[in-house]
Image 1 (cartoon, helix red, strand yellow):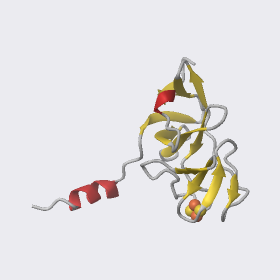
Image 2 (spheres, helix red, strand yellow):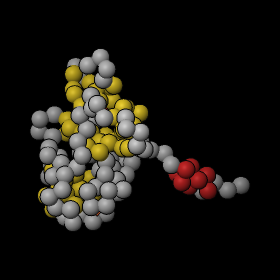
Image 3 (cartoon, rainbow, N blue to C red):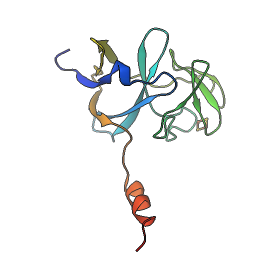
Image 4 (cartoon, protein in one colour):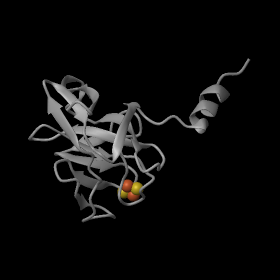
Length: 139
Ligand code: FES
């Protein structure tokens, strides 16, 4: 556990939605978003991208929608089983979300995936977001 990075505490992972964080692939690919979500066994982590259009985020910054133990992509209504990541319904039925390896110890959630490094919590900020927040402010 010494090389693992703490993501958050178990208490911070919501019951009804997802917890968003950022990871950096060690292969040099661009930064990605991931989610923590509760299942019957505890907490599991997936990359935050639908398998229909893989640039579409499941958690768009305020938590993904959960229905009956499944994460819903609100773009075209795909359902992903929380515990397996399998799309059970929708345009990408049968596809799987990409799992991120985490561990829970003493009430804390750690990233232990050798393919990713922890960057921080919350969504990836883009230049578009910056422009958007400033353009609403006029003098
Ligand atoms: S982009 Fe997710 S269902 Fe189409």
